[in-house]
Length: 437
Image: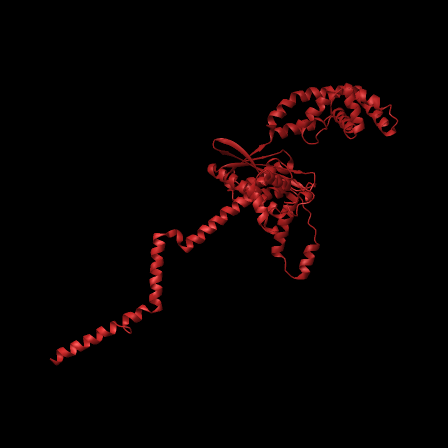
């Protein structure tokens, strides 16, 4: 009996410990960790049944919305830059800053602020609400139309174009390079690099970049010297005071091309052709640019000279004949005499009886000289008649120059040389035109 009673008392005590106000269940229910677990369970069921209400998804959706909105804002600006670039139209004017939109009609600007800004205004007037909203709602420093942003966007377009070209090349693996170096109107040595390859069973030639040879050479040599220079102030001063003579040898041009190809991640072993002009700096078998590129590329990189340039050099070589050379000089002086003065050109137009201008002789390309010489020969009668009229002017400088040119144009040597040159160019002109294409 005592044993059974002890068990009953113990059970009553245990039952009373779990229930009641101060029981274990009530105490557990009021604990914070129990309440948090209930909340987490409810949140889990809500997210499971309605995943769009999840915080991470809400944040991600907002982020996606902002990305779409930002892309819509920047799209008209990028499209305007690409349009101007395709049409070869400069972007900037005299001023390229300040507020673009002027709400007050009394403050309408009549100043041309450049093609880019004027094109943006035209888009807004044509109903581009996205661009208008962007410029009206953003801070002045976040409009993305400054000259700095323009350059960055142009650089992005360049990288995208090069990426597309390199992707197309990878499809066929093999490629050829075309390069030429010349001095532009700003007296900078520029080298053009073109890649030739097959894509989609078609031969493609894509321009890659202009390379300022002297600047590239100087920066490379400077960076190489800075790797070995002591960083003391004395050494730095001595380094800055040194002058570098930028000799553009064939080996230097070859190194520039090889470094550019490596920077584009092009495998030099897949280069199967090199095309240049016929100058010695390119074709020298000892230190020419082609020789250096072939030593770094596959031995199968065949050198192929520009056929049109060979024809151009041949004609230029033939012009060293004294009579032909003197005749070309007289033609150039006569064309310059008429084209450099509106007054003299007006006399030429009156004699022609229509709008007529003489073409200047190109210094480097004979394909353009063909037309100049042929037009000059066909217009010789009118040119002599115009010079006769100008010799009667009271302007001593013009009349004396006209008399001198008239005497030169009417000599037998010049007339015979002009007709011989014209007959020869009639033969080479079709060939030059085909080779240019």
